[in-house]
Every structure is written in C-alpha cells, then in structure tokens.
Length: 97
Image (cartoon, rainbow, N blue to C red; front, side, top):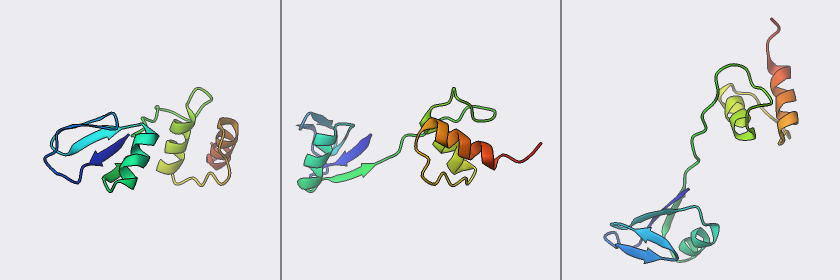
C-alpha cells in the first residue's frame, strides 16, 4: 500500500482512481503510483506488517512470514528466495538442541 500526498494539501477528490481526503489517499495500483510519482505527488510505500506465527518456522508458513522471521532473528538469507531454500537456511541457523 502506498500513501499518496497531493501537492495541494487540502485537496479532496479523485485522481487516477484514487480518492483523496484533505490531500491524502492510498493505493496498491502500481500504474497509479507511477503516475503520481511522475506528477510530483509525494509517494511513500510502506511495507505491510507481517505477523509471525509462534514456534519454529515450518512449511505451513508463507514466504513473507519466513522472511520476517529471518529479519527479526538477524538471519542472512543470502540468495534464498523460495520457501524450501529459506527453510533450509533457517534450519541451518538453528542451534543444536
């Protein structure tokens, strides 16, 4: 989701399919975001917070959850991008019990 701030701070209306209230709107539409960037609107792309399940990472977790877990535990995933590769890196980082 990107927060879009119009150049006219008190603008309320619709531009490129995005509703603005008092100069602020939001959208996931990449084409609209590109338009706003070209037109000088302030665009801030916030990463969505990912809820990390309790327990150890497993195959039932999403890739986003695995990446968030790795970031929270300072694990460098290197080139791992898919679920099996990420799980392998995380398993290798687990201390021996």
